[in-house]
Amino acid sequence: MARELLLSARNDVPGFLPARAALRKAAADLRLSELARAQLLAAASACQGFDLLVDTTECLLLFVGDGREQRFSFQNSPTCDELRKSLSASDGERNWIAEIVSGDADLVRGLESAAQKIGQLEMELQETNRGVLALYAELEDRAIRLARADDLKSRFLSYASHELRTPLNGILGLMRLLMARKPQGEDLKELAFIQQAAEGMREMVDDLLDLAKVEAGKITVHPSEFGLELVFGALRGMFRPLLNAGTVELHFEDTSAVPSIYSDETKVVQILRNLISNALKYTERGEVRIWAEFGESEMVRIAVKDTGIGIAPENQTRVFEEFTQIEHPLQRRIKGTGLGLPLCKRLAELLGGRLELDSRQGVGSTFTLVLPRVYGPSDSQAVEQPHRSGPFTVLHVEDEEIDRYLLGRLLRSEGPLRLLHAVDGQAALELVNREHPDLVILDLSLPRISGEDVLALLKSGTKTNSIPVVILTATHFSGEQIPASLNQAIAVLSKDALADAAALEIETGPPVRVSIKS
Image (tube, rainbow, N blue to C red; front, side, top):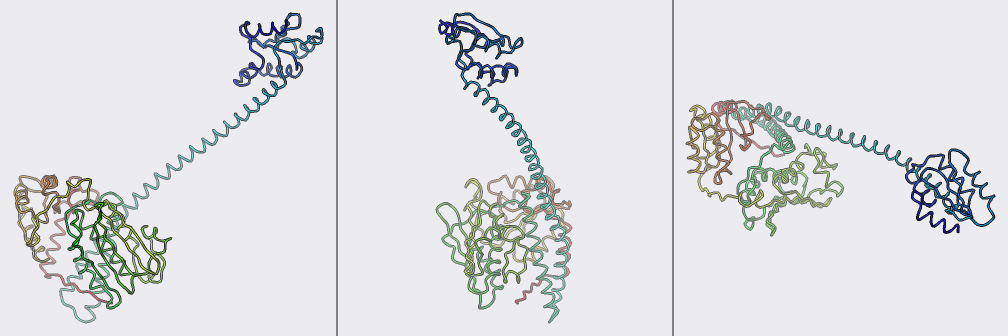
């Protein structure tokens, strides 16, 4: 009878749940009062082997063998005592109500312990989250400070380079003036040493300025089509006088199998000049060999291989870091800034390529410049330029006659060239389309069409966009004040500097260059 009542209570009485499920639910959502929890645990301990039902009004309903029921309120009497009293008054038969086993009490205790651990873990997690947020804030602050420091470094390098260039140009100008007086004996030798030191310092300043421009994203690529044969010829003529007689040989291999390249010739020459200069510095005996090859991937590889001191594996990454020089007895005898290779690497990346290094210490090094044959996203940038067999042609666009005269005097002193003149923007555009000059020197204040508009029109034309343009203006711009409309010019020069240079040229005549071999 009791079992049937139990089943009926479980299935038919709304609001009642088996004790095990009730305990699980109560412990899981932690909504049962602390008093009810303690009484249920005590009841489970006192009534093993019997059945118990819990209703939603926090009362215990006890079924005895004859079907009678007793209801015990948690608030009015100690539950365990009432249960013991009812059970001891029974007729000894096993009373089936809702069975409570000792495992239910263990379950509640385990859930309580787990809840405490969960709470503790939640507190620890919150503390960790606060630490992570603080760390993120610190990292963000450091990133901002690093970016600001990097920007300040680039600005300082650019400013310092500009400020150093001014006295250096003055020193070199005075050296040209003194050399024009044809000094003799020790005077000639001492002046030549001063000239070489000043030119070496100017090269370092130029490297600093170029590196600052690359890092600041202010350097512009001016692509044009050129062949490596002429580049190798110019480099050969540049470095042959610097060789140590009989100890180091310089070889430039034939490049006739390599097609022409559409890239920035000036920057390619600058990279190769740095690489060859380093190879000659660190090669006491043997050779420096330069060659080029063209692969199926439309990439041109230009290698500079030497038999010098080589670079240890652990230092082959460091050599591309700024202001880094590797410890070596030969290195200590050679002065330098440690900017050459970092600048070469940045310029190679700017041209869409890379700089590779293969070196063995004590055997030698091979630096390879890898460049796309055509700079830019598509071949449409590569415009076939007409081949000119005559002299270098310069178009000077200037409406002031005296400025045309001064520039003409300077340019004629530099060697044979063809100088064209235009006095307004419209005439300049017509001459460019008809003559296709190698260089345009452009004034900004022009009648009919302004210099800025002429520059924009030249750079928007498919046949004229590769012609380099130099702006020559009476307006004084600092490096960061140059208008964005002039960014496509390769240089912005002051007319004051032109006047000073022309005056020096008229007074002294052509410069005299002297090289001293150690």
